[in-house]
Length: 512
Image (tube, rainbow, N blue to C red; front, side, top):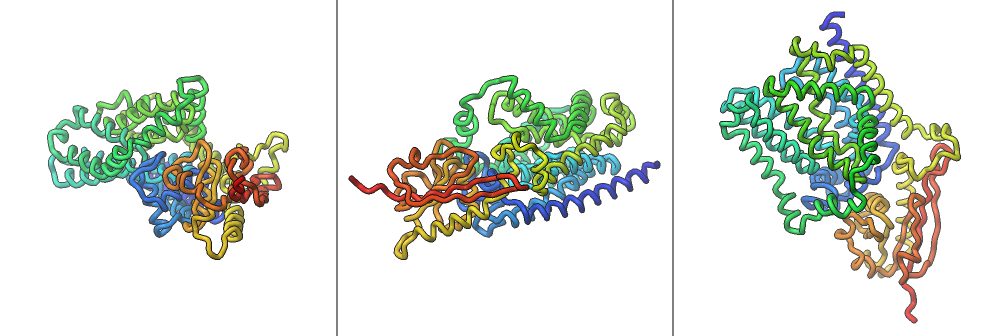
């Protein structure tokens, strides 16, 4: 088959895959609710601030825009994320072409990204990783194209400026964006970039990024760096390098990227490291791979609460490098990648697609739960169950709150409280803003400042909501209150118990 025919086939495959993926995601947007973390980010919309305990505030700004000043609904949020997740491989294609990669290799890179579970599944969620993906790739594409322009030219100046804004947005999405800034600094030290480094424009780009990110830094400094303390101290009680952490990192990457694409990426990374001084684009892509890996890798090995997607930024330059290297006949025959063979690369696409399809099927086809033997299925560890049941539970809570209020009651007289941030976030995202939501227990996240216990504990009635994922005893958590009423709501999925919500209505204990 000729190169033109193969290129046309890749166009067709990418277009067909995009149409199918968009249809599945649009269906999912109307079926599933928020995951626990998504609910927290949706709650950010009600409390606009430059940074939160877990992340900088860009995701909160996005959520606020989607909800028109309030928390967005799952349908609204997932409709947007469906579109952006579907456009993600096309963004990769655009960046490859910006860096003057050949069309055939660029389409191959886009197809690989389209089927990687970390992208095809992960970007469906309303999380900081979604804006980070676009901002990170935009930075690479714009900064790299600027390095390919004439030093000091108007084109280079404009491209560097745009890349600086994109870099600032990457940092405002997740703190890991700072590693990309370090990668750009490292790139400017490469021999192939020195002519640009002697001009003001790449430094102006970094200055622009600092200006965009400055509100986050100033806010954190003003209130005592709570995000850094939360990430590096308060959640790291059991931290330490261990075999368990190493296995979590390795297996996490295999699962998130898919096995064959993961091996292919490692082969590409090794080749890129050797070829880093060949030209300025390779220098940039190598720095953007190595720096995040060097910074975030040890953190993942040390922290028991690290998640596999923390290393996602280190993977993003590799499909771009695959497309870029394919334009150079001398390099495209290099052994580490060529040894995998075209058949292996195609198998990698198929396996990645199958892994992503399996995740969507597990979430969207409840009857699949029935294939798991009853004795080995624990609904508490099936994270797909996060996505179901909360609309019914929230309706129940709204009715309970309405029944607990008197005609003369003030809104703060009845408060809804959860025992852990996951429950509190789901309640806050689902309930009207007029119903106050508090959080009790050791893991309260941002609720400790949004509605602290010293405030919500003044309420006459506490509606305590908890579920079967974690035991919660109202008598222990609220020793000064008496149980007035209690009821449960059960949610099934595929004929199996998925969630059991318990709603306890607590009043003040009579004096004496």
